[in-house]
Length: 200
Ligand SMILES: C[S@@+](CC[C@H](N)C(=O)[O-])C[C@H]1O[C@@H](n2cnc3c(N)ncnc32)[C@H](O)[C@@H]1O
Image (cartoon, rainbow, N blue to C red; front, side, top):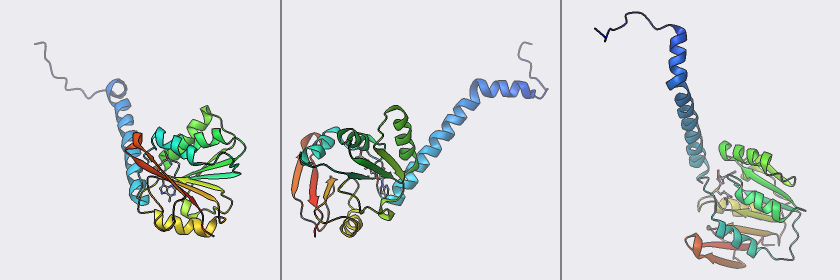
């Protein structure tokens, strides 16, 4: 007698109550996570580079490779991902303008949210394809990408940058340029960090 099946349609109020109790928050969370995942996947396939942050030891090696006497005016981080390295560069060189360029919207958005909490007035985060940006004023460029984009990037930097300017790449070497210095980072699966001067 206790298990009576109701033949009445649920009222709208009851339905909303039910969804709020169980359905809507989970559905929204699921939709947001799905969209975020699809966005990351789409831009990873488009650029050929996942938004994988560089290892802290690799970042320290990058700073070791920048000569102490070097006083950059404009630094570009090409593919700045979630912003870890861009924020460190901006903190280390407060007199320089640091420009982080990122095409993937989610990492780019996270960089902007970080900026609200970690104020770095000399840091600019730009949503763009770095291959289409003018990098002529760069006196230091850093990037951590993949093998595939390095050849195009090498041509781009050779065309845009002043001869003798500094380029540091993590893990993936320039195909034609001869590195001035290479440092191996055992803590970061023996990744190599390359320092180049733009050839004249
Ligand atoms: C491996 S992550 C490196 C993140 C950060 N530089 C670091 O060292 O922690 C490379 C980033 O480059 C971005 N990227 C790849 N090609 C790009 C392009 N042509 N323009 C802008 N961003 C690009 C990817 O979306 C990705 O977030």
